[in-house]
Amino acid sequence: MPATMRVGIVGCGNIAANHVIAFRGAGVEIVGCADVDAVRAGREPAVTGRDAARSLAILTALYASATSGHPERVPTLETTR
Image (cartoon, rainbow, N blue to C red; front, side, top):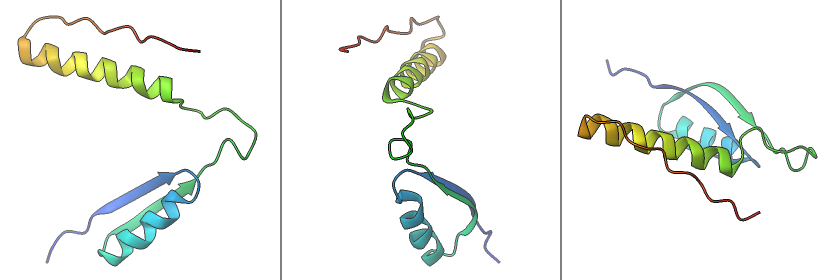
């Protein structure tokens, strides 16, 4: 008997709902689903693009450090605001 994949989906602007349809068609068990649209709610998103870019920079430095065996600098992000 194959294992069942259990997933939770978070999307923005009805993205999660569309993924639920696709995952159900693949036999995946959906354990949670939320669509969040902060802009329509008049709020700043909890995680901004800048936040995501900073996380990516940290993870990239982390992987580079693991590969090289030496500390790696996390690049500073330039803001154009």
